[in-house]
Picture 1 (cartoon, rainbow, N blue to C red):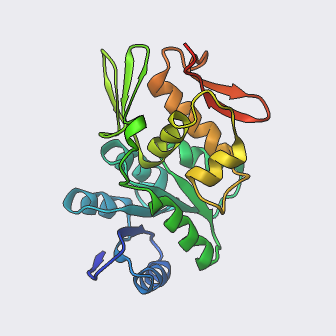
Picture 2: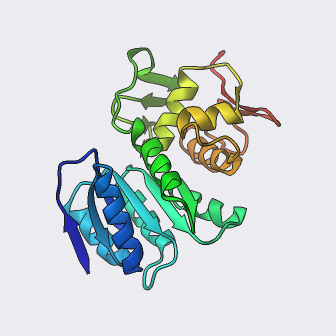
Length: 237
């Protein structure tokens, strides 16, 4: 079953969860906050909606009948760069990394406070769609060109699309090039002030970016790790 609710909104959010009560609470809460909301019971329903409508954020449960939330996340990420926030009852680092590696931009652990959920949603939506600053509109890394205006990474052989948070993270590196940026600063500047200890976010996203900008991701030349401190984008050459 797919339910659409139309209203003037701050953004269009797709809620995907097999529990009717959770969808109902999410729908009422988000509409009260000024969002437009659609919801779906299964991953297949969500993918059907994604093909028919444009969304600004997907709120996606991990455990669902049929196609799982993780697989649904991968399917959405294959065609769209919009923020995806996973909802999960699992709180181990491995489960979180699996969700992030599937393409999620963040997660909340059930049960959660609605205020926490709303803060995470606001953080993910805050800079989505904002144009890059003119001084960082393009960046050359050897044979690779990063076009911040189109949110793409282009090489001689292939082209990659940047997801919303990959874009935010890479843009922050580009505007602070050759500076080691501490973990906490990266998390708070890119994900929001409620973050600071989620270093697994950074590990997954740095790995994803290295696969797109480095010839040898396991031996990076540009996106470097400063052990126990943070990361930096090396442009000194």
